[in-house]
Image 1: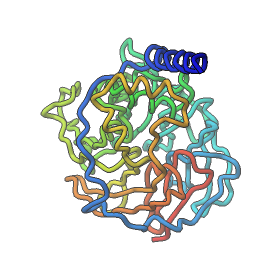
Image 2: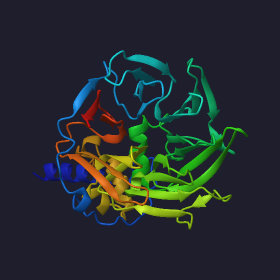
Image 3: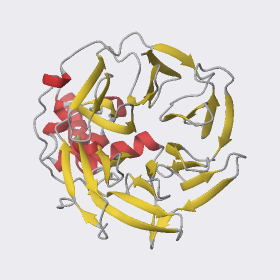
Image 4: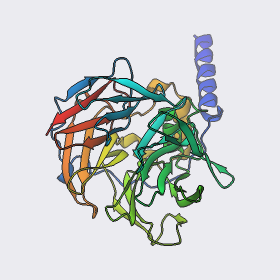
Amino acid sequence: MKKIILVCLTILILLIVYLSIKPVPIDPVSWNATPSEGYVGVHSVNSKLSNLKMISLNGEEAPEHILLAKDGMLYTTVVSGNILRMTPDGENQEIFVNTGGRVLGFDFDSVGNLIAADSMKGLLSISPDKKITLLTDRVGDSPILYADGVVVAKSGKIYFTDASTRFPPSLWGGTFESSILDILEQSCSGRVLVYDTNTRTTSLVAKGFSFANGIALSQDEKSLFVNETGKYRIWKLSVDSLDLDISLPSPNAVLLLENIPGYPDNLMRGLEGKIWVGLAKPRSSLVDKLADKPFFRKVTLRLPRFLWPVPKAYGHVFAFTEDGKVTEDLQDASGAYPETTGVTETPTRLYIQSLHSKTIGYLER
């Protein structure tokens, strides 16, 4: 009996030592998470996102971003590095191009070039004849490690997010894994950049985001909307000034929506002035409780992955106006369509973007 007790104590001591000192890649920062209000008010539980119709991607996965282009074709990015092109009903699917990386957000410029935020390559321009050109992969001496969302202004300026300057997907197992590390650490290294097509220079717009993600322009193009995924909020930044180097908090940055009940991902302009946001995951009460406990966030990464406090699947997208009023809210508590990252709105359909699905979900309007 004494030997059994001794063995058990030895194992327990070794486990404690392992959980206390095993090296992990993050250096967590303590922060205060506002207690979640849950699914109340404008975000009251509903089933409006249930029973989506599906478009098969024929073996491809993760339609992270979707756009209906001026050529009448639907474009989407997938985890293989392909950008797919198809008719709006999902027919005639083809590989438009493969970047050799992983494109997340993209937009089109005035002459039809596809401007892609490639999380492993940087900011790319892809011509209609499929020629790929690197526009930028650094700002000054600082490399762009996690290009994420992008939007092209009428002026030709290209605004885009560099989600994390700490955990590049190319080195940490992919975009999802890198995002987990960045959000657990909370070092707030995310930033917003702008590429000037006239001068071919890249400049800093704003910094200090806990995973800077989706981005959209206001209708007058004087403001940017930016998702701060790691802190459940959306900012509105003024870019109508000469001083674009904004460090949060700043007089040029308004906290438009906060204490959102999930992790905001993509931002997409919809019809009638609205902006759509997708919540990739709901909030976790355990994750919030660990906000001011950096040591235990390190311990989390020492556990087997199946024990990580990853929130359950829950489908959720909503639309808001430029002054922050929520106008539509669509949910599916079953999470049948996983990780809803955003919405592409057309006059006849809402296409739902996803981080991991092998289909494109949509609702008829």
